Image (tube, rainbow, N blue to C red; front, side):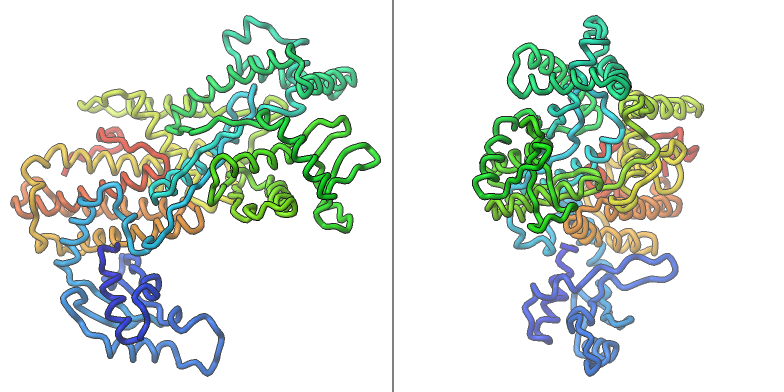
Length: 588
C-alpha cells in the first residue's frame, strides 16, 4: 500500500543494496506532514539498515545516507531524492501521487490501508477476544465501559485485518457475591420491584446486604451458606440465581445495542464450576496442589514459598475461585476454538492474576498458554462501586444524549436533524470514545463532563462534525462532479498535505495492530480533520470552474471515506447529517 510507492522505492534500493525488497519495506516510512514547510513523501532510515549495534567503527550514518542518495536515480515515480538527518528522502511525482492516492481510496473503500504491503504475508489467525465482562445482578457500571470499548476496538481491528475473531463476554455470574445477593434478596428484596426495575433493585439490595454483612456475622455466614448451596446444585438457590442472570443479560444486551457492540458468545464463570473441579484434580495429579493449615488449596508458582507467587485455587469448603474458573475457561476455549491468540481485556489491577493463570497453564503442560495475552488498561478515576457512590453507564449515555440535544436545540437554524435522539447519541458516544482513546490505555484518567462536550479541538464531537460536513458537500455538489478529475487542479499546498496524510493511513493501522493502542488512529483522524477544515476554507467548490470543483470534491470525498473507516474501527458510527448547531458557516 501507500499505493505501491513504498514497494517501488524498495525495488530500486534492493538493486543497490543487494537485499530483497521485502526486507526494506518497513524501513521506508511516509513522512509526517509539516505546517512549516513542504516535506518529502517517504524516507528511508539508514540507521535501521545498518542495524542497532553501537559499533563506533561503523561509518557515519549521514555519510552513508549521502552516498546512497547519490547512487539512486529519479524515475517516473520518484521526482526528487534528498537527504535528512540520517535519512534518504523521496518525493513522489505530484500528479501521480494525486491520481493514485485518490483512485486507491475510492477503489478500496473500507479496505483502504488494509491491503498494504506492510500486511503482506500476514497469516490469517483464529483470535478470541474476551472483553466487557460485567457482573451479573449489578447495573452496568461506567467502570466496565473501558473494557467494552477497548475490546470492541481490538476485535474490529483484528477482523478488518482478515482474522477470524470470536467476541466473548465472560460474565461475572458466580462467586461469593451471589451468596450475598441471594441472602440479601431474601432479607430485603421485593418481587414487584424486581419485575419493574430489576437491576436497580438488585443493586440496592447488594449495597444494603454488604453493609449488614460488615456488622452482622450471621448475615455473612448466611451468604457463605447460600453460595455453598449454589455450588452443590440446590434447585431453589439456582432458580433465584438464574432469574438474576436472565434479567441482567436482557439489560446488558439493550445497553450494548446503544453502544454498537455485539458478542458471539455470552459465557460466564458459572459455566466452569464442574470443570474447575477437573482443573483441581489435574493440578493435584501433577503434584502442584498444596493444602494450607486453613484448609485452602494453593499453587506455589515460585517453588520456594515466595508469598507473592502463591495462588489460591480452592476455598477451605471446597468451592472454586476466580482463578480456578479462568483456568477451566481457557482450557475449554482451546478445545472449542483452537485459537492462535486469546486476548483478555481488563483493568491493570488484574495483571498479576493473569500472569499467574498463564503460568499455571504452562506448568499444567499447556504449551499454548504463550498464545494468551492480557491487554491491561487504567481505571476511570473518581468512581466507587460498593457504597452506592456509582455512576452507571446508562445514566452517562442518557446524560450525553440529553446535553447534545440541548446543544442542537440552542442554535437557531432552519435545518432540522432527522432522528435527533439517535444523532445526539452517536455524537455523544464519539465524544466518550475519543476522550478514552486519546492517551495510552494503561493510563488512569479522570472522567470529565467538560472535556466530553468540547465541540472544538481534539474531540469526538469535532470528528463527527467534520464527517457530517464533508458528507453534506457530496450531497450538495456531488451529482455532476464525481466521474473523473484533473490531477493538475490539486497541487495547492493544502491539497498536497491531505494527500500526504492519506498516504500514511496504512502505517497508522500497522502501528495499532502491533501494540493494540487506538491512540495512533485517533491522532491520525484528528489531524486529518484539522487538515480538511483548513482546506475547506480555501479550496472552494461553489463558484469554482467545473474541473476544479470536481477535483476538490474528489479530495474531500477521499478524506470523508478514510475518516469514516477509522471511526468505525474505533467503534464510532459516523454521522451524516450536517451538525449545523456547531457552526454558522454554510457549505463551501
